[in-house]
Image 1 (cartoon, rainbow, N blue to C red):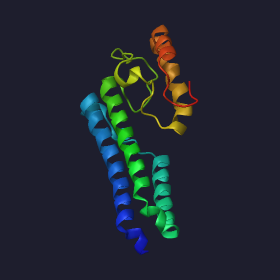
Image 2 (image 1 turned 180 degrees about the horizontal axis):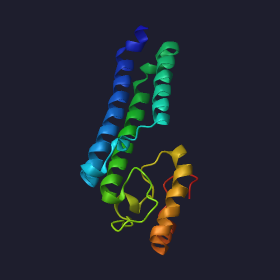
Image 3 (image 1 turned 60 degrees about the horizontal axis):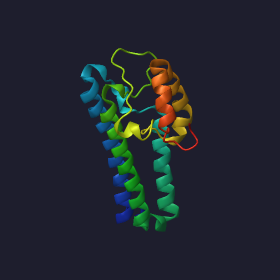
Length: 171
């Protein structure tokens, strides 16, 4: 039980909690600053039933690891690599949100709106979908690109040929 509260394990759990809170609060604040308070709802926090289940599973995994394999939590460099990946992912996601501006939404638009613009500069000049996690993309990207092709036609086709999706095995 003391391993669960060792210095390294406590730091790791604190970093996880901070990262989760930072992600959701910053998503909500950016959504409000981009779309305005009246156009943002609590769904912009991106918390769903599946997400809550995933978070519970990650905490259970942590408890099992720290209880059964406490020495694993003492390898600070593993935590450092994970933390660096979280920070890099957040930077990429926030760059994507700021670059896309009003074109960035948490829900896929299925109707073209007057203010929609095809964003192909900044991070989107390097990768078409810079903010989606892999398992999620295999389903989301084809769905999202179907509507992008409908909205922007040949302009999007040319863009898709020039810029990779950024997701391994997803065209």
